[in-house]
Image (cartoon, rainbow, N blue to C red):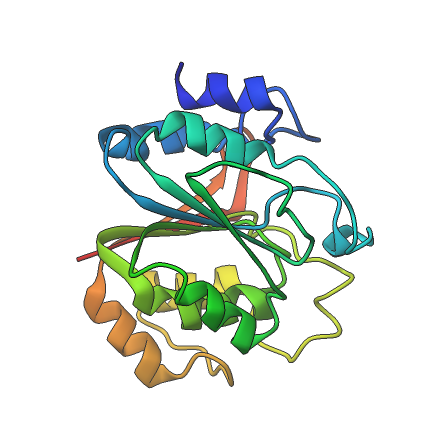
Length: 226
């Protein structure tokens, strides 16, 4: 089964049948992940299910994690790591490690960073708050392996339950797009010019994608490092 088939099988909104609307990210992911499919990867996803506090839902909840099931089947030799503010320790698989934490906590993100020697793929699909995305990038990007991929999803939307309450930073889509595509550093109290210049030394490819069916503003970014 290709990745879109698996997303639809397990109910992930990254495919074509689930979500309002479905994101269709698997169209791209099948292209960039296919050559990695049999490799013994460390694969990390932040944010494991919709309906949490980013949408006003409860932190304490029991939910399925469709994308975790999808990744485990798609990458048969990978170890999948998951991070979420809610508890997903009920997912039992010898190739899955769950780290519970808050995307606004440097300490929690550092625990996540130390959970593996390196990460080959990192996908941020967590709260979608710009501060959380950038704090995660600051903590986790240095842990990305050679030829690794760092991906941030859903940049077109910021959580109204988080965005106004967190320290003010530029919107992630604008900040990363300006820096990597236009060579323009937008002042940022979280990600310094020095940090971003060091990151740029490692980045081989930066790509920005709009909605795959509607176009428009940047919805996803993908960074591949040397």
